[in-house]
Amino acid sequence: MVWRKKENYHNVENFLSSYGTLAPKRYSYSDLKKITNSFLVKLGQGGYGCVYKGKLPNGSLVAVKVLNESKGGEELINEVASISRTSHVNVVTLLGFCFEGHKKALIYEFMPHGSLEKFIYKESSLADHQLGWERLSQIAIGIARGLEYLHRGCNTRILHLDIKPHNILLDEDFCPKISDFGLAKLCLRKESLVSMLNARGTVGYIAPEVFCRHFGGVSHKSDVYSYGMMVLEMVGGRNKIKPKVDGSTEIYFPDWIYNQLELDELGAHNGITSEAENEMARKMVIVSLCCIQTVPSNRPSMTRVVEMLEGSIQSLQIPPKPVLSSPPRSREDSSAIESSSMGIF
Image (tube, rainbow, N blue to C red; front, side, top):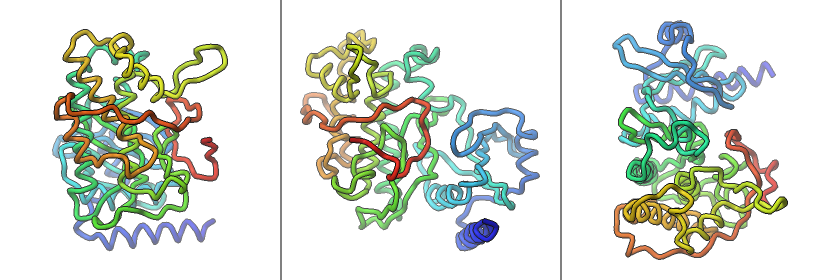
């Protein structure tokens, strides 16, 4: 175990050295304590570790993610390797990092409104007050633009592989920013597939091919699927698994919302009060259903997704109904999974 820790330490150090001036600013652990006022204000916690509010010497507010000792090395490498290559209004900015022995942390720009998931569930006190349909639509378009940039706008294509509401942060103007690149994979822009030994992502958002190669290879279309599931959740304002309706069965959320779309009942279940809002919701649902097609080649690129969301509803056709079933999951289940633990079908 000691040997493994030393090996991991040297791997991270070698990686950081190889990045040279391309890497973001490096901070010491004592710097982190000053920045966070000894980790006084905790913003959140997850499987990766804890996030604290901080302030840089220049007065800029930041979010400091302190990584778990066990998994922090790989996540730090993934974040620095991917996000340091980016510069886009819809991708969170990595301002620095700390790697000092077993102390590992990442420093990001501070997002005042936190994560999207706090605003889209009906049980949240925030959900119905600040995110109307116009804003939800703009957030969906912003996330799509961010993903389009990751897939096409960088010299190296970046696959996020964990798109979900928890990993979308909102600034003071509710502009969405894609965050948490701890599971990201990099590939040359000419390549479309990546090699993965284990499935990665969050149950309920993972594309079929990520956990079962029978459906095809893992590619940028895997992010498209996760995006589609997330936008469906934004529209439905609820978990993707509908609560039991007859005492014994559960309804797969895309099936449930697909049926609403066909019956023109989106407004009856989602607080829609005008034709304009109904059109926004229908457009988001149709695009999302296109994104979650089982066969990756049948899904649109993120460039096409942006075009559809910004175009006319009349130009869109309802795609085939999703054919997969999904396991029950809790909204709190945000950990990465491995293929050996998946029992999807």
